[in-house]
Length: 252
Image (cartoon, rainbow, N blue to C red; front, side, top):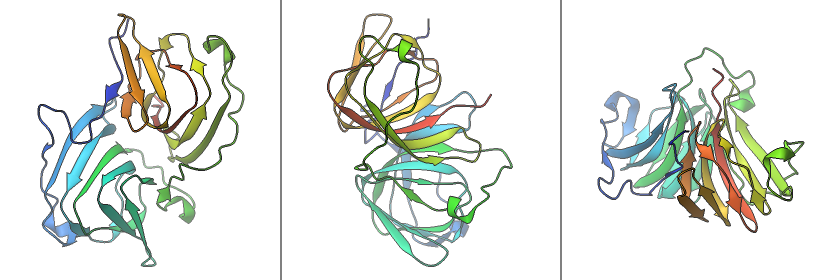
């Protein structure tokens, strides 16, 4: 039986250590600023290509160029300006969630202190996005009216089948990473081994995860947590729940 558990993310890192200094950002990649960055990595998957945690940094502006990874971000404090090839700047502030696809041509313009949660997929493949529109920053509209979820395995539920809706805003070129918004009515599942890595940020409602040893973890609106692949997983929620998800389902 797996002893994995959902990992709760604290906005300033673990209480005992907080955020620790990371290596300096190379000066050759900067237009301005001498940024000081700190972070805490809450999760790294078995492939080593997926990492996730919390990061902060002082102001900086990076040189224009292709973004090196696929990254989901949830801004906790401050603001980030993303400048595209046409010189248009889109600003993301505390509470905003967005995705940058690997290879997107942009400049990171940060005029103030920033803190964020992140999920990075450092894709080692040579696969590339085929359409220019695939290489644009994607803002998640968390208030979007969601379409119904399609056909699903109803045997995994205890009791009534919940009414669920979902919109996927992003899927990477390998098909392993996806980001979107999902909701559900009352939902109770049978215990099973979780088949993917998933970061969840609850927008509304609350959920509990009973474990095989009798302990229960509970999360409510505003909480962010990672469920690792292989976790003994049983979802229990009463009432409406809405969340942002960032899923990584390794192909091998």
